Image 1 (tube, rainbow, N blue to C red):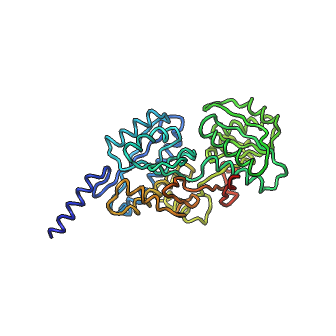
Image 2: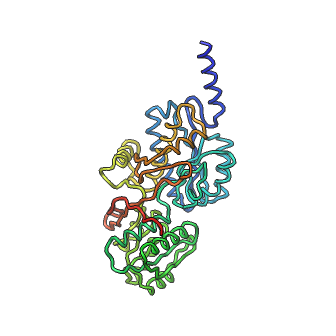
Image 3: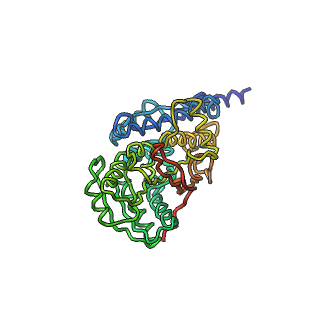
Length: 387
């Protein structure tokens, strides 16, 4: 009984010493935009995570601990993200971060993660800065933007178009420049010409000059590193000019809202996606749709919602592997044990000592104008190796 008493004391002492962990709960924090330009994304994302955590908590939690999920608003502004991270750590005492929305906010808190040794699982951005070079406390999602460009080029080549002529319109920031880098790499691998490169500043609304310049170069395919509203704007401008190349966008354009906003200008529009909640026969996708029916029946499945749900499921798997006495370093080691993990709507995920990107593959979607949504038209495509 002395042994038993000392075990109980050791266990409660451990629980007190591990921030965010009690005998019955584990605190997890997310930072996302709830009131700024990406508020729609942030609300969808956090609702998806909450859906999965509700399911897990109803099963009794992870090793008997229920998830206490706290979401902080940063209005998509890096200084606010830093303040939110401090608040979650110092006031709320979270165990770890998950699903921080966007490259600027995620990057802004990197120094805090290093200093406090707190993991961030699944920042919601496909920027290569999340995993290159690898950072001990950051576990990125699959589908980096540069890889998406290379997948787009491979898809174009395999679609049998003779002598494709490529062009790109990209947002002038890390997101867009990642896409440009990948397009140049993909063009080099397949010996194709990039006939035009056009750019725009974040928040732009007029794309008439970019559309005219691109049209003059006469590409067969235009790759878009835009976001939802800007994608609809460039598709409408092309229709107005009676100009009909094949437009292919990154996963940031692959929200059904893009199709709704663009209307009939979205006819023939293609987008890449590293989430497959479209396939009827994928078990993880079927489970996701079932849980929506059970917990949030008014909702339709959506890209950002599915990402929040998936990051939550990755974190829960990591916590399971961490064991009954979770520590932050233990979580890092548990995440590093993922090898071809397939129980999600993403491509197989592998992490390791020096691998922090979960894998690169994407499916291709086509806009269905009548249904105002995207439909899946390919299986997983991996990029060609670089030359």
